[in-house]
Image 1: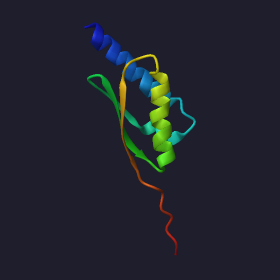
Image 2: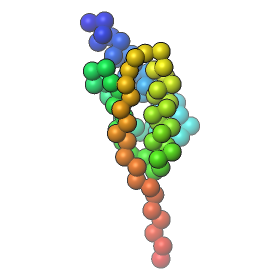
Image 3: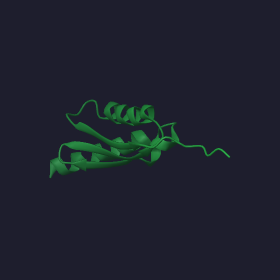
Length: 82
C-alpha cells in the first residue's frame, strides 16, 4: 500500500514538472507509472523538446530511484509551400 501511495505521488510530481514547463508542447506529454518506471508518451516537434521533457521529469524525481522511459515521438512541423 505504501508503494501505491508513493507511485501516485511520483506520477503526479512528474506530470506537474511537465505542466509547469514554459514549453507548451511538453504540457501535453502523457505520464504513466509502470512498476518502478515513469513512462513518457506523446508527440513533440523536436528532439530537443523530447530531451527537455525527459530531463524535467528526471529532475523532479531526482531523489527517487525511478527509471524514466521516454517513448515520446518526434514529428517536426512541416510548412506547406505553394
